[in-house]
Image 1 (spheres, chains in turn purple, yellow):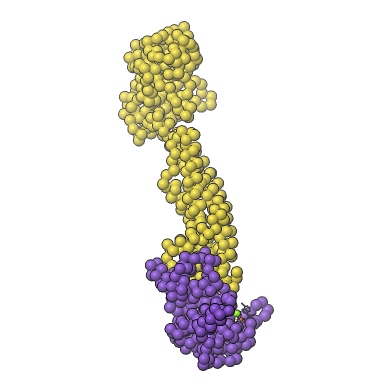
Image 2 (spheres, protein in one colour):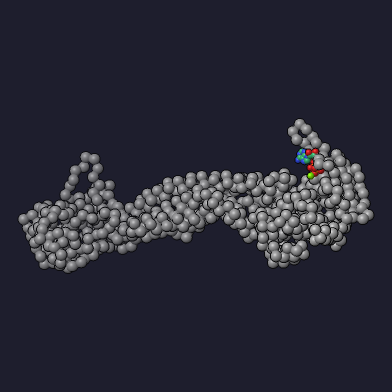
Length: 244
Length: 394
Ligand SMILES: Nc1ncnc2c1ncn2[C@@H]1O[C@H](COP(=O)(O)OP(=O)(O)O)[C@@H](O)[C@H]1O
Ligand SMILES: [Mg+2]
């Protein structure tokens, strides 16, 4: 799915140059659920931007879904972002003036999907995420968890090869965060490849592989034999709440 | 993304900021309204001018004696025989009448009045499209036998005899008398031609009253509009030959007058068009300014759209369309206001309101052009944004 080799990124701001990634080599297979952790400034977001084709590496090669994307132009990048990648952000990044339905349709708009088809699929996916009675609500009329579910629906809508989520639970309370993780786990069980950035170990432990970054390098790459199950955790929390 | 959807996106974003959008388009509204009003008023005024001029008959022409420095007035420069010769030799001339002008005190049963008198023949009524209210105009046999008859215009008739038909009544002029044989409809022309009061006498009768024969002007009409030029020039040639006086006569036609009137209104339209153009320019700069603000404010939106797969081209087109839609909106309001203005002026001035489809099309075209021209720079700025930077902004 993803094959990067000696990828590095150096930012130059005026007189200074900041090496944000210092030569990373990494394979992610289809169906994996990877969490990237690390201290602030360790290069997690830079990594995600490169994986998401929002930015270009200073050096190294990148194979996405079997295709070498190192030498493609801006338009090709835009097309690949549209077809192969679904973004989920910490701040949801929904357009405030569009309803949930319209926000989800947006990705399909740039894919050139016909109007009726767009409507049909957006309703389908939003229903799958339990938002069937929130289709015509605007972001400011929805809770954080609901907004993040709309964002996940938007990320899923073009059947991307990979979901990239940068701190998707960062703006949510812990129970809502778990609900979002439970959705990711369910999607992953059905075969979706997910790469998630988080600085919270509790969140990372829901994935099946944790990459630890420090100073622009991956310093640890660990398979998780028994990931936490968000669904069970929520049940447990509910029972506890019920008894209290 | 197709154009229809881009237009919807543009409308969506304009709607979300109604007041600002309205204020932004104000310059465009004023510019377009000015264009429409000015062109509408200009065209209406011109149409009215044409209408008025056509009352005289567009086939009309006239010939004057062209006195140059040092030349003195001569009674025989235009003679009654000239008319006969011209009518016999120039087939393009349909009617030709002498006009001898003077001012006379007329006295009727109810009052007296000093009016302009014109000594002429029957053809004059045809040349000037005169309408009789009562009786008849001067006839050729009046002139031939020197009948002492007079034709009044309505207002003069009213002044001299009060309301009612004065045909058959006697008018005293100087120490002579004449019988009223007809009344001519007074000209209600807005242009003020002929607005004085006029009485018509057979030319021969006026000559006898004066004690001399003089023709100040010949007025004629050609068989058709196309033949005016020929009728006029051939008549002039005959006069020059008969009087051995090259360049001694000056001919004019209503056609020519209309053309120069057209030129004047054309220049005025041009000047006011320039003013409208400047206000469109100012309006366009306002639109550009607001589009730049909008692009900055919506940096994050641009980043999101790019992350979702918008190409730079898509962002560029989105903002250009937004700018065009904004200007079109202003344009439509301007068209309505401008049309209202033209209508109002037309109502007040009593002339036909004329805003042609062509003018409206022009206004729409201007709106689109302004939107396109002043939208390019902000849209280009938006499309050049770095998606990561844009996403980071709030
Ligand atoms: N646009 C940029 N210009 C300059 N330096 C940057 C830029 N983006 C990130 N950096 C630097 O690169 C390093 C890695 O940043 P980042 O990938 O955002 O880390 P993380 O997401 O793990 O907190 C940091 O030192 C940061 O200051
Ligand atoms: Mg980060």
